[in-house]
Length: 626
Image (cartoon, rainbow, N blue to C red; front, top):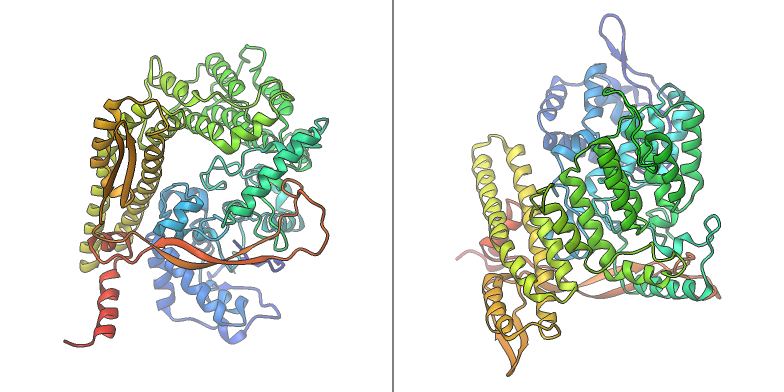
């Protein structure tokens, strides 16, 4: 996100009555740099406002020039001193990750990019080593508007910068002038927005080991030791730092270890109640998410009963224009708060109560979120951890293996009639495979095949349009962003389908599928998804083993030596032995599968637009003139 150096307040460029722009001169300001700049600079900035991609290129140019110069403040002053106040405010608003970047300039199109997807697909170029989108990182500090700064810090999952910005707001008096800034801090500090959690529900779910010694709950010694061994084994095998604290350089510290602290959400909630800051539903929902992150579901129940009367099965009287009237945001918060603590059944009951009491129709996004939570809680890491403590929580934690089927049948039937999309079909197929229901899983996969081909067609069409616009020099930023988003959707679908195909082939022999599945269903499945399956396919039948060899026209992946620095495990959730000596980071160098440079039209459609020109130049250098 931002640099870790201490931040200092900047002064906004101001103007006098005549419209002359001036700025404060500090000890580090270069007077020669603040002289009148060419008019071309202002024209370049004006062009940058026309599209997010233009703004991104302009800001990158400024940041590169600032890195080369030793006087960072002088460069920013010389570029921004010629701007009127309105233009500067527009430039700062263009950096808002919620209102502007998230809606217009996200090349991943709101797709969760996991460690495997980042390693095996070109989408890894958009993600840094901590699993955060690179476009929310910056080496420069804007001048004002702390709300946008808090959003940028939340999008980068940088808690250190959040504290510094909040301290600056206290020193400048901005915190008392805008009570809503407390809720903006709550959203960023507890990662309450989907963008802040990188659209990954499983990354910040509450783990049982983090509830130990919280309030009156004390875990048994045997269960605690078992959970530590599980966490230690997972941390020792993984080769990524997704979801970890970027400022912890001596040991590996997951973000959930920071979010488990109960004092920050209680402090913000107490201040908001004492100073009467609770004026709308959205701010209160952000505080509820923060309380759920540390496992304080009792306080969440009290808030629902105090402000909305959900627990007593009665509706409170709210005016139609009341800011505290329940909305879809409240229903989404209820699902998130209870499901992140693995109380899936409670989430369904409270959701149904709130929906019926206030006559709010459950939206598609809420159903899709509930379906994804069912899949996450049925997965092996989550189900194994909560199964250890099932007796201590009296069976209220966790879900049944058929939770995905139950949510799917409920939301698609009357009276909801929800139409699932491509991602929801993927979750259903994954849930059926985990139950060894290969017959239904094959039917769902065959329904996904035309949807995947449609994504491929959209990807190729968007690239053709971008290539034509680049040749003509018309609407290049718009077509480039559309192409990159189409590529992200296609690559994400390709990666997820490939994982499901491999799981199906592994479980065909272990399931109770009949001969009609292995003789007819599997060959039809292989024919539909041959480009997603391994080169050599093997699966058992009644009379032996079927082996199919296939040579792909181009290599999607290749092996390469990759270096990785593994930090020692010292936190209480994974430390299983006492510290006998000073731990040191471990440097690992091993072979991994990485995207291969394609030598076909497929590579031309998946890499950057100038891929063909680069390949021709490299071939000319290696081969020489003919």
